[in-house]
Image 1: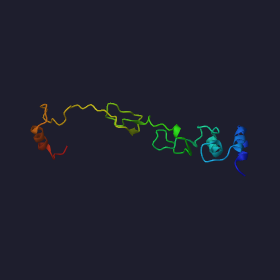
Image 2: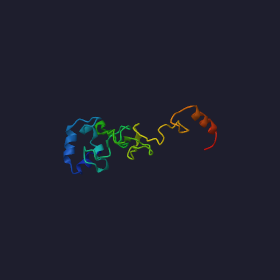
Image 3: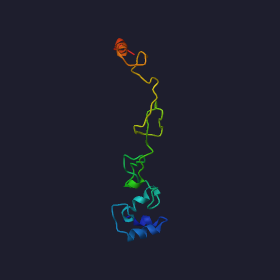
Image 4: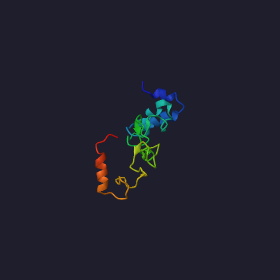
Length: 135
C-alpha cells in the first residue's frame, strides 16, 4: 500500500486532506512533495526537513542533500572574502576568495634592491650578482 496510512499516524491529519485535494506535481507545491516533507520527521511542508534547502553548489548555504531546492533560500555573500592569512583583511569565515585582500608591504618599492630610493641599473646588477644562488 502507499504511504497514505503512514501519514494518518502523524499528528497532522490536515496533510492527508490537503494531499487528497491537491493535484500531484513535480514542483514545490504541496501535492508534489508531501512525502519528502516527512524526511527525518520534519514538519510537513517546512524547511526543517532535510529534503528542502538550497541545492545551488555556488551558494554559501549549499545543501547537497536538498532534494527539493528553493533558489530563494540560497545565500551568496557570507562565504566570500579574503582567504589569504597574511593579508590585512583576512576573513577566517571566508571559504571563497573574492579578490578583496589587502597587503601592507614592508618595502614600498621592492625592486629597489640597494635601497637608494630608485630602481636603476644598480639594482639590476645587485640582482644579477645573487642570481642562481640558493636561498
